[in-house]
Length: 338
Ligand SMILES: C[S@@+](CC[C@H](N)C(=O)[O-])C[C@H]1O[C@@H](n2cnc3c(N)ncnc32)[C@H](O)[C@@H]1O
Image 1 (cartoon, helix red, strand yellow):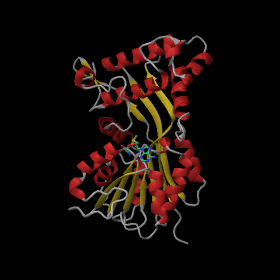
Image 2 (spheres, rainbow, N blue to C red; image 1 turned 135 degrees about the vertical axis):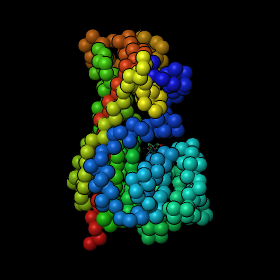
Image 3 (cartoon, protein in one colour; image 1 turned 60 degrees about the horizontal axis):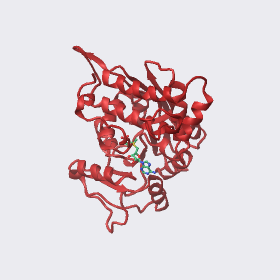
Image 4 (cartoon, rainbow, N blue to C red; image 1 turned 120 degrees about the vertical axis):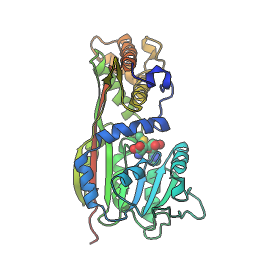
C-alpha cells in the first residue's frame, strides 16, 4: 500500500486532473526539492544582487518566494502572477502577513512592506501579458518599483510559447538581470516496472500535450537553444529530473510526504490524454491522438492501453510504481547596460 494517499486519504481520483490544484502543487514541493539542480542553484545565489526585485511567472501558491528565503535570499520586492484565480487567492492567504496583494486594475497596486521588508504582491493575469506590461512601463512600474533583477519561471515554460516567454522575460529584466527556469519539462516520461504499452502511451501523452496550442513537451531543450543563442550569458544548465518512488516501511511500501497523491495526479494527466472514457476498452474510448498512436503500433490495441492505466493505478496502490520525468533547470543573465 502507499500509505494515507491510496488508503482513502484522498486520491485525486478520475476526473480531477488539474495542474492548478493546490494539493497537487503542495505535493509537488518535496519532489521539486529533491530534484532541484544544486549547481544551477549555487550559480543563481552567487549571481543574485542583494535584495533583488523578483517577478514570478506562473507563481502558483508563491512557493518560489518561500524557497528563495530558505536559500537565504531576501527580496526587496516580489510580484507573483498566475492565470488561476484560486491559486492567487491561496497565495494571498499564505503570504497575507507579508504585504497587500494587488489585482490588475487596482487603483493603487503598490504593496505594503512586511516585517522582513519584502514588498509582496500577487495578480491574476496571463504572465506573458504581465511581463509585456512591465517591460513597456520600464522605470515606473508601481508593483516592483523598477525592472526585476530576477524572473522565476518554475514548471512553467512547457505551458506557454517558450520563445515568446523567453523573449519577454529576458527583455523585462534589469540590465544584467537573471532568468531562472527550474523544472522545465524536457520530453521524457517514464514509468517502471515496464509495461507492453509504455511506448504507445508515452507517445500519445506527449502528442496530446503538443497538440495543445502553446504547449511543448520539449520546452527544456528549446529553452536551452534559445538562451544559448541570446545576447546574454547562459550561466548554468543542469537536469532536475523528477523521480518518485516508494520506500519499504515495515511491511508496507510508502511514498514520501504527499507524493502518492502527486503520482495519482500524474496518472490522471496521462489518462486524460489517452481516454475519452477510461472505463471503456474499445477504440472509441480513446482520444484521437491515442487512437493514432495505437493504429501506428504493432500489437498494442486499445485494451492494452486500458490495461496500462489499470495496472499503473494498482501499482500505485501497492507502492510499486516509479515515475521519472526529465527536466532542465536553466539560468540566464541578460547583457549588462551598454
Ligand atoms: C505546474 S504549475 C507551477 C506553479 C509554481 N511555479 C510551482 O513551481 O509550484 C504552473 C502554473 O502556471 C500557471 N499558468 C499556466 N499558464 C499561465 C499563463 N499563461 N499565465 C500565468 N500563469 C499560467 C498555472 O495556473 C499553474 O499555476
